Image (cartoon, rainbow over all chains, first blue to last red; front, side, top):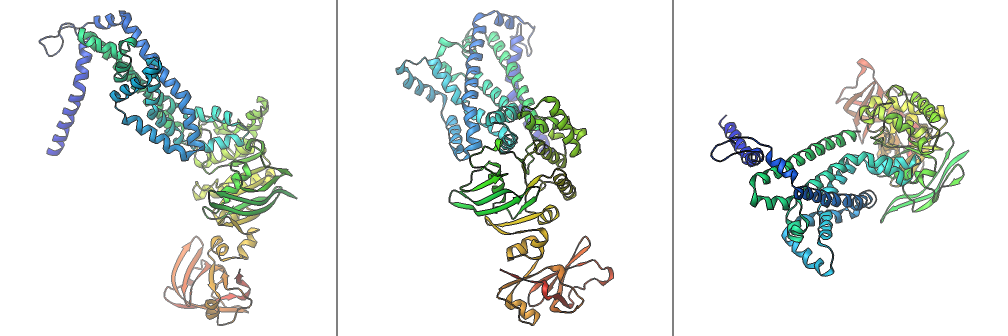
Length: 261
Length: 333
């Protein structure tokens, strides 16, 4: 019983430690006056309204969506077909993808940023394109895992064989059978990648900075001018991530259900 | 009439040879079974016939046409997989219609053919269900319907029943044989289950280490195994070396064979004219349905199978003289 109480207390402290800063930030986004009291003395939507009236925020939001979404779309178009071909037809080369996935994790953002600047600045390549390229590679682990797990859930090679024996070309088999089957897993991987890139700050700040102001750079700026506005940005970010997480969870469940054959 | 000819089929994966010069001739409307343990190359033959794997050398002709370089989709070969390989994103009806849709058949005709085929496999009421909503047996029947509806020249069955429980498997074996005869379809089944092979095949090819160990009708294979491997793989045959069996029988055996096989059910306790005796002490008796399998220990261990006889059960630990007819002692090569 004593052991149980200690465990419960530890869990409670852990939850408070994790949740309290988030709750406080959320409250601050809607707080009117909040100086000497535990909870705000009044509530307001003023900070959110100010945020949505600020063109710089809307543009920063648009840039974040464009950059993260662009990187995800490029990754889906370029990396996913490669993973399909390797996993289905050349499985012995899969170890190289796995090595690449590990390498992505092993580069700290600061080192990556310095390396990218040193290499690409001399060629006159726009730095935002360089960051986009780095993002495409950076989400390789999420895209690879999403695709690989989807293919593992179904016997993808056998589905392709069955479709071809029924008269489908390789492309038809891929489009009509495999893609609809693995789509929920792929989409979940894409959303996860998007949410990771949407919150990325180190690389974009060091390599491009305020020349391409994303939501994270905007947030950084607002931290020094208005805590309420910064909290409102965080609130919007958390809501967006919550929605994405909900969709990912739904899709993952759907993917598992669909392949339970 | 020979419908499928396989000549000198050879397959290597890297340095490992999985098929050694396989030759087969299959008639139209025959139900053929490739029987063998895991890794003997039987599924590889099926995949090569389907065009899903390339042969290292050798030729395959189906209905007089050389299959070299012909794509799987153009071979008119159907296949049913062990894991069913049903398309999870499609309903039963859509799965079955897939092949006809690929042929761009008119939708009214597709609807009619799908209805007919679902009636044959008794799945009409499940037409709108998704594969995940079906039992294993139902899924396998969908896979069968999907393969049959395109009217392939030959249907390949890669251990289609092995994932099912015994009762459903037996029911589907009977269904499969009935559908094959009803449609006069040439079918090649791959299985490691000798009872399944015996139950539904016209002819069996027993495979061992990438070679055909023996081929023939189920009766011929069962009653006249040519090698120790076939004798032991297709049943519970007793296999003896010449010196052991001569010592047990107390007589010299004819011919040059070094090993001999005796079917367990050919051994009995009553002496008949021309029988030779086998001495042994009963060590274990197991009942399997209406059959009792008794293990005796004498000069060598041997197994006897007899129908259940109520009160006359074998007493463990007691010595018996068993008998076997001389013609039931099969010389192995």
